[in-house]
Length: 469
Image 1 (tube, rainbow, N blue to C red):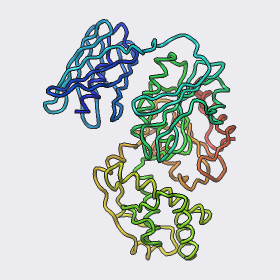
Image 2 (spheres, rainbow, N blue to C red; image 1 turned 135 degrees about the horizontal axis):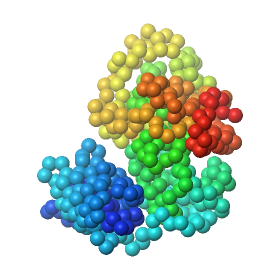
Image 3 (cartoon, rainbow, N blue to C red; image 1 turned 45 degrees about the horizontal axis):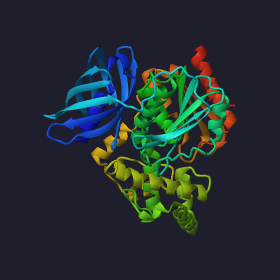
């Protein structure tokens, strides 16, 4: 039933052809069911329509829409379900019907929101900060004193809880650096914590459309993000290539999430559990104790130092510089796995065919580690969020440090390797900063990388790969 609600609100998006841009209040009524209220945003481009529908359970995009005044048609997909909608628009109102999977059908009524701001306004935005909520996600938009007409969409990294924004709080140093260059900066907090790639894709796109509707279409739009935000940056660039001019991906796991997490996160937990049984519960049933991450990391470090031979073997396997780094990384991975087990509805990882290498005694370890089969549905979830298409249609610059205990150099190389297999290297450049640490870039290094990306977009000259100065 809630699928229908989202679907119908999308239909509502497709408002009157003479005024399709903007916000819409939607009442969706499935046959024999109570009406459901939703919100919708629409962006109109010629005979095409794109939009985002928001409900209590999430957001979804408009697809395959056609506009032939006053008739509207489109398809809307929620998960694996496709909906077909027909509507007639007139005088700021839309009426129509939909058909979904099986016998699912219903009606909708949409009206232009009274709070709707003029679309594609040409007025110069006023310096300041806008915070609010789109659907269930908080957002923040920073506007510079001297706006250059261009937008940067920023995607934050992994957090156990959704992002929150305080209008009175000063911008981060990186945001301020972008503002000083004249760019507006928009960022979603996502409606969920954890590996919220699904939510981030939908809600960041909704925020971008909100910006267009309220401040006008930017001259250029760039997307960037750190860590998990780097994965989201790639996903947005690949999913909405018409919306962005270029992308700066920083220190994210840029290969297929399933294989990247399997080889780094899950395999480390498996080998740790072999050397230190029951400390984390198990790799597929993480103990509640890890939720107190600071105290748990201290326990991991203390246990490791009590068994120096085991600590040496695990540090060798994980490539860690010291026992503290090992303890913190192990604890963080356990937290991610605990959240993934809930989010995906089971264990996504299968190590029955894995041969572990890099310990102090590989044959003994391979005989002794526990083996696990993956839950098929959980595996499919992690494949979807996210496996890169690796067919970039816009310039993408990727930035990593040479030593990162969370996202290893092998993970950083994965997207480039995928591109080499399908011949898509022309739109991708990878650079490195010769430093240890996760996302350990200076603001100057980040801005130089961003400026090189902008030059690439504006001149067509592909920057050199290699070290970022």
